[in-house]
Length: 193
Image: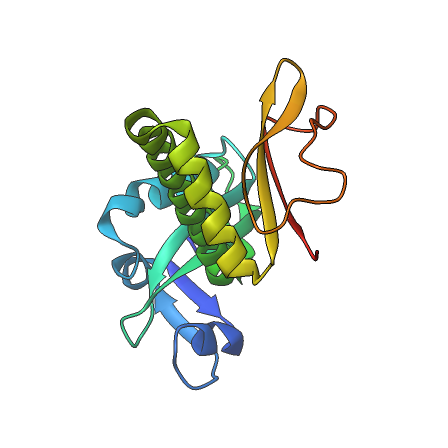
């Protein structure tokens, strides 16, 4: 990037990344910023201003970018000042843009999954409070047996340091329903017999 006139030169991979045919791109900083969501522009401009003023040599910012087809993608822009004037103001930057879209999508999916697990846990605790432990545990083993297509399933709870079977479906194992060692607060197992 030439900061004297805010011209930015990008290679053909950038054109492909934003949904255009591969070709080197010459554009303006203003045109690029127009494709960054408005709420993220201050971060981008602040990172650039720190390099321009000489506070730092490196430019690093993650932000979204609106492609030519309208789709928002994530990009990590990393640059370095390679030329300054006699007053220390940045004249030229070189850098690279990395597509973070897949990683950010995976991160968002993981966050949603964690929220789902938290909601399921909260719902289970609420059911326990409303229905009673025995009914909820029996519902769990019935559902687990159906999901696992297992002839025998048991659920145990931690009581006084031991896992004690509290609900089951199917035949009782030969060793019976005996307390087990301390493995977890709640445990279940599906048996083939």
